[in-house]
Image (tube, rainbow, N blue to C red; front, side, top):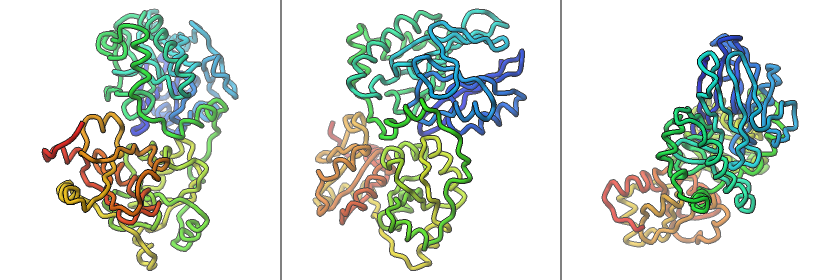
Length: 460
């Protein structure tokens, strides 16, 4: 049996390509929309993709199941409850699919989502006993999946279902079972997910905090409290994936834009995303641009803060970054991309166009200005659990994902500094404040990490 795990940083998504030694057929589990990498991997290993398994209707990325099936002729297998809008084989409890020496056994495991299924895998060349569990979004490494992504009311039903799916079904299997989830570190589909990319059922049984809860009530309370926010783009992808998304050639999305074309596009209401570093953005950027640097979490924050039906264009460190930008946004269905400013800020400056800036503050300067009240408002945009672990006395907590909805709670006439863990998220927030008319906005370089390392005081 051949098996390889693929991982998408930032959105924390795992998918898998397996191959049968007996018939050279390949199986893909929970593919994302960037299907070329599965095709390339199969080709490299002389395999033919013939089967695609989905564990649930995904909220966090556009599934590549339909597009991959249309490209390869592969069969798609999914929960009967998913009611997919394209050709597939619906599976119910204990249904089996044999592919060469490999046997997949479906387990109906509602909890993370209503239609969720997990798959046991047996390599019958060794034993009929299952050796691997593809756990989807229910059991994660060091965590469990969130049952609240579809709203608080449905969460009251899904949380107990998750408990029973884990306790009465998944945990009935043997301790030696290897567990490979769909969601990993960086995903908002769970809290406190480990960076480790796989685990065993026995280790999770003994050390997973969620599984250590003594009663169903305690478990439900644990999984419904302390979750991070829900990115706005999650709300549309479930139905997108139920219908199935067709393939769009990446090369057809956007193009190089001249300075004049960019200026005209901005006049039509196009949002400018400056994907450079916070330092470069702070030094000079297009007025009204939003700074979302091309980091691992680029997709999450752009998808959270920019509606998918808004036209966007990019300012980049280098023109060669554009294909990667498009590829990342393609995974979450952001395709209204007009293109990028050809030549970047250099071309804008050479054309004599106006620029704006956001001063960057060291923590030493922040401390001095904060104590002298030269900074009147200090906004901390980190997650709630980060804030609770230690923040600067007198700061205002305003989570980045909610900042545009709550921006009116701040005074635009006051000098405002923004802080996060490192300076990345705070630069996004500072650009949003600047865009909203805040006159004096500062970004804190190094963030709370640097503040704490310097030994400066914090409140809890």
